[in-house]
Length: 419
Image (cartoon, rainbow, N blue to C red):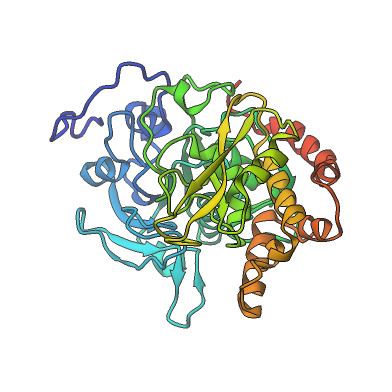
C-alpha cells in the first residue's frame, strides 16, 4: 500500500509463499519510482490483472493517491474490468467505481475505423502513461500490441511511459515458434518476435523501443525476485485470469499449442468446454486414430489422450465430438507452437476432405477467406499455410523457421532485466 493511504479500507490477504515483488508494488513502495508519478496526471492502461500480490488493484492505488491524479483509464481487449468477450467491442465511458473516464483501445471510432491507439484528445489531461497488464508470453495475444501502440502515442504526444513489470507465465527461457515476417504486423502479431518470445512486458517494451527506434521516454519498474527459470507457479503469485478462457496459468501453454488452429474454426479446441485450448475435437474425427497418429510422433513433453465430449458453446456446440485432450508431461522439454503445427498437419493429412486450412468444408467462401486471413495474421506469415497445402511435413516447416527462431532467442538477451 502507499504512503498517502497506508491502511487498506478492506481486509486483503497476505499470501505466504510469494517470491516475487511486482513492478506495481515497487512503484508505490520505493521513492526512486514513486517520484515518476508524483505531481503528475496519470493515464493507466490496465485490466483486472493489474493487481498486486494482496489482490489490491493498481486502479485503486492510483485513484486514492493525493500526490498525483488518476485522470484516465485505457481499456485493452476485454475492457478495464474484464467484462467483454474475446474480440467484442469495448466501449468508452466512465468507470463506475472511480468516476474516471475510460477510453477504449479495442473498438471503433465514429467512422467505424479501428480504435486501438490513444488519440491526442484522450491524452490531453495526461502527463504520464502507466502500463500494468499481465501478459501470457504469446505473440497473438493483443495486450502487448496495445502497449506498442500506446508507446507510439506517448512519443507523438510528448508523454512519458512507464511499464510496471510482471512475470512471463511461461518463464523467460522458452522461445517457441516462428518469427513474424517483418511488414506483417497487426494487433495479433505486433512485431518480428517468436510466437512464444520468452520476455516480460518490460523487456518487450525495451525491445520495441529499440527495434522500431521509437524514442519513447520509457521507464520499466522491474520486479524483484523473478528468475528466467520460473514458471508461474514458482512465483507464489495468485493467478488472475487474463481473459475469459485463461482461467488457469497452464492455459498459457495450451493456447500456444491450439490457439492458431482455433482461428480456423474448423475444429473445437476446447473453447466452450471446461478446459479451453486443451482439446482438439470435431464430429468427424476418430479419437483413437488421431491420438495414435499424434502419439506416434513422440513429441517431447506432451501426450494425446482420446476423448469424447460435447461443447457447450463455440464450434460444434451441442454436438458429439471425438478428438484428443492434450496432457503436458514435461514443461521443460515441451515446445508448444511446434506441437501445434504437428496437430494441424496431422488433421490435414488424416482428413483432407474437411479442408481444415480453408476454415472447414462447410464454411461459405466469405467465411473461408476470413478464417484464412485470421490464421495467417496470428502466424505472422502466409508461408506456414502455404507449406502445409504443398504437402510439407510439420518437421520440414519447423526446420524452415529454426534459424530465425534461434537468432531471436539469442539476440533478445540484450534486453534481459533478469537472470
